[in-house]
Length: 192
Image 1: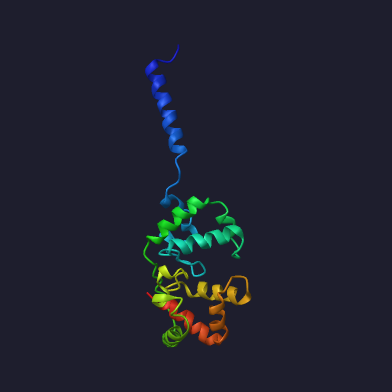
Image 2 (image 1 turned 90 degrees about the vertical axis):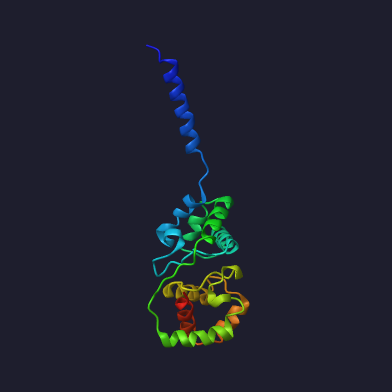
């Protein structure tokens, strides 16, 4: 028995609708959700070795992802992940994360080191890492309230040459002792 015209029309419409949904471009929030496993929901990391990406400027996010994608920035995992996204998808994610509030970690730190770090920040870092390391618009990344282990790993990578360190920053870092650098990182981690 041949199918009825109404049933055929309904089935055809369902197939068309299904294919339209399946081929729809991913939204910014859909793309951002793929980052949640490591960087936390809406970019607020809960893991001490993974940075929060909530609140990053669009420029910083795009530049960082492109550097991972091209291999210009060293990584263990992010280079492979970044290669899976188009430039348009990276831009969508950048816009999404830029709209999220900067994550607050509330980690336990050494108050004496935080105080020492505040003085070191004022003399060494404030021109590039504005707003106590929490201003996204300076396009230097957000250091405020990042996890202390992540900050330490990042600085170690820069000192080892596996991650680029701006010349001005290198001059400052080279002039500080390991204890002073630790105090400075604790200060950044303490900023809420």
